[in-house]
Amino acid sequence: MKYAMDVKVNVRPIFSNLVHSDWWEGPCRVGVQEEGTPEYERRVGKEQFKIWKEELESNLDLTRCHLMDPVYLEFDESFVVRDSEFDKLIPQNHEVDLYLITYRVPGIERLGKPISMINLGPTPIDLVGFYRDIGLEAYMAHDYEEYNRLLVNLQVRKAVANTKILILSNTEQTPASVNTSCCDLTKLFMRYGIRNNRIDFHQIEKYFLDTPVDAKLEKEAEELLAGAKKTDITKEYLCQDLRYFHAVRKMMERYDCNAFTTPCKELCASRLPQRYKFVPCMTHSLNKDDRIPSACEEDLAVWMAMMMMMYLTRQSVYMGNPVLVLAGSRTLEQLGMPKLLTQPGQTFDHDVLEIHHAVPVRRMRGYDAEPQDYEMAHFTTQGWGGHYHVNMAEEEGQIVTFGRFNRQGTRMMVAVGHTLGCEFRPVYCSPAVYYEVEGGARQFRQALAKGGYGHHQAIVYGNHVQELIELGEVVGFEVEYFH
Image 1 (spheres, rainbow, N blue to C red):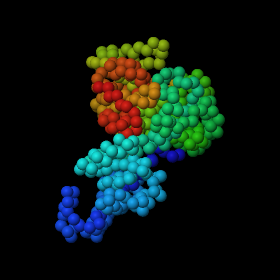
Image 2 (tube, helix red, strand yellow):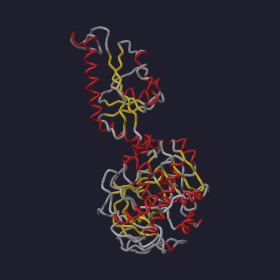
Image 3 (cartoon, rainbow, N blue to C red):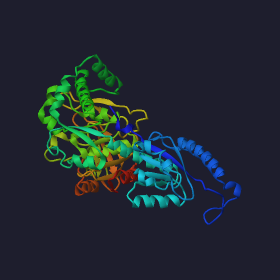
Image 4 (cartoon, one colour):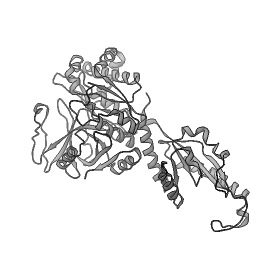
């Protein structure tokens, strides 16, 4: 499988050197004669070119970019870069995502590629302003820290364009439980390059039946159970969830996909989970901890936010239903589905937000950090339906960022929260995590409804609001910051 997160931005550095045909002084050139000859300027330029190359290798974020071979170009006081110099660039131009120039390269706009500079002087303001005005993508940075933030955003954009989602669907325009899901897949492709295979979810049955409970699968289940702090599901039942997980991954391989979603209500109504004793929850958790954006309920609006957050932060992301817990109350009311709600075990002196779903993850601290401890729980009263229990209130006051896209996939609402507590429940969607929302939980829910966003929230550790705003500018979506 080609993981979208693994792509890198191909950066081609260009060192342009103005080598004059002779020495003189004037309104834009001063210096002693021995430092103004063509031979001197050429020699110094090539020495600086070598130093610059080493500096780039030491300072650029090579986890986000691939540094292509730097190119040395010359031009004289005619301020024309000859075709013979451009010939050094053209053979690999198709591989370049971003040119990084040291100074002016007259005519580089004809290559049709994004251009960037790291410079404290006036030149990048002039060049970037010019390139953008003529419709060329261009960026300036004042230092390597700022430039590396740009590389992060460009790498996320490239990762998004390399994402193809497997949608195991009931093939309705929107899933039954998420009317605010992004329903126009063509627009997502046109805007971001996101591709998809949308397939009737009944087709998973064949892949499931072709995935036997063999010694390898049993060992996988045994290792999950052995690593848990507490277990509340049998190995036999957990194997059924792992069969579904591997069936999904086989379909993803078959259709060259690296992201996933499937509906819940429609899948439940088919009785396939009852027949084979699985729920998709474990699949989503395992996918996300393996750097694969994977969302419940065919909700592409929350999946979009999840994907952006995962690619940006390189952390796993929790998602769930946002429920209002009233100040001083332990009562949850949701007309139509009262039996599915478990009352909170604690009260709060102000309205708080509860987020519950059975898809917690163990890599919320980051993919390069130690995974979090977990318990193994079951979803149904019959004892089947394996999923994680992960304590997401392990640090009191843990700051988180909430996110969700609108139906059109053009705008993302973000908010900041502080973790207040976490409870595990015996069945159904668990854990439940309690958050204080900056700006108010009640007001946040109203903003989600009035803004046309919808319900499910993607949650990532840390305050990433400013990073998401900057990402939106590069990737091409608006960010609405609720606070």
